[in-house]
Length: 464
Ligand SMILES: Cc1cc2nc3c(=O)[nH]c(=O)nc-3n(C[C@H](O)[C@H](O)[C@H](O)COP(=O)(O)OP(=O)(O)OC[C@H]3O[C@@H](n4cnc5c(N)ncnc54)[C@H](O)[C@@H]3O)c2cc1C
Image 1 (cartoon, rainbow, N blue to C red):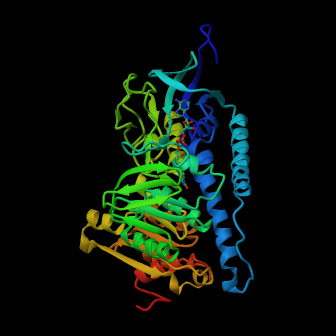
Image 2: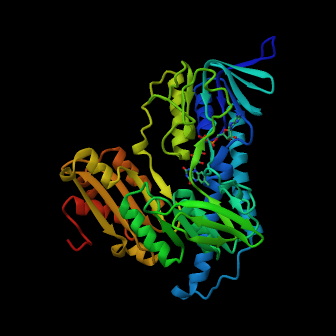
């Protein structure tokens, strides 16, 4: 809706059309609220264009490369002749383009007005884009997401020192890469490049890879990476990098220097909030993150924030959940708040790491050492995992005589198991209840059944 001054208005003005912003727009439109959605790039945001989807396409190509390389082990004569990055990239870009087209169509169908341009919050109810003011009659939703961080003094040149954005656009397989950061993004790229034939070394300052996961998962992932000859150094800090025609020379505080063609900086993502007028409009921002209460209200009435901009797990499905929550909150539906500990987490390297709820250490901290029980089921006993030649485990963590509060698994394709695990944890199921549910044989899903049967005191394929 436009008024005589040329400004436009809608019930909701949403700044940023990534997972959080567009999910909020779609749900709000469904609830008959009018929406203006402002985006400086493409609808879909990081996840669709520079994150979840393109990385998983690369990981699928990596899986196919490994299958070709290892076919002979199961009697299929095959070999890996090489990686054609042009084709890999057009496959990846094709997936993204199809999803983008679908999303744009959905947004149009729900009659959401998309404004292309960079927006700035100029009042608590107004976002300005190129001199035009967009006024919210009910609420403004901040959904500007996050960006790839670097370290002080470490300049990203986009050529030899890159972030995930440039890594996704590489037109070649690098001969060697140092990956700075052993978190989700670092281990996923390390896994892809190794499968494509690169020599990879991960540097992680904390004592283990995927340091936010249960310690047992890090151990098994590290063992699997060692087997795959993915090098890693943990508990060691980066101190500097130089480059010349031969590549990068990465020095560590231990005194060691690593030479490689590329350095991928994967040290985390910072909130995109600088210069967007948030603080000037009275919105409280701490270290760049917009502060919200559990109902995602900011310090200013009728201004909400969602997704990576809000401190917590930086995951697309958290953004979706935030967006839906805020739309329903504004519509007065009194939705149930999104709690980070109930959000499933998957790291898609080979092998995959999947978890939900508390780690064992967190459960012990919360409930007391003697009040927590866990069971780790080794995938060695799972038929389908043996067929897939994967190793790993499924671990389920319960409060004694109480519900399951945490789950973690490592192994090929274990990300696909997180749905049931998430249901178990979020529904606060008891192991005895899960043990009564029949799991199909032979599936990897059976390993969840086995773990809960064991924890319920009735193990089947387990040496008790
Ligand atoms: C390499 C990589 C892999 C990932 N893999 C996964 C995964 O497998 N699973 C998973 O769940 N998550 C994954 N993530 C994280 C996921 O992408 C983010 O959690 C998610 O995109 C956050 O959504 P958001 O809406 O908060 O922010 P974003 O998706 O970052 O969207 C913010 C949007 O706001 C726009 N914007 C910013 N400022 C302005 C402005 N001033 N004016 C107009 N528009 C603006 C941006 O252009 C962007 O489109 C990955 C991230 C990366 C980088």
